[in-house]
Length: 55
Image (cartoon, rainbow, N blue to C red):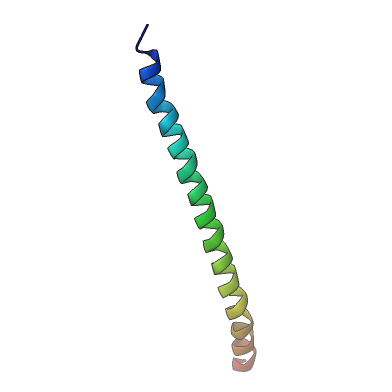
C-alpha cells in the first residue's frame, strides 16, 4: 500500500486547480455582469426616450 499517496496527490492538485479556475470564473462572471448591467442602465433610458419621441 505504498502507492496511495502518489495517487492522492494529483487529485488534491487537480482539486485546488479546479477551485482556482472556478474562483476566477466567478470573478470574471461578476465583472462581466456588472459591465453588462452598467451598459444596459446607460442605454435603457436613451431607448425609452427614443421610443417615446418616435410615438
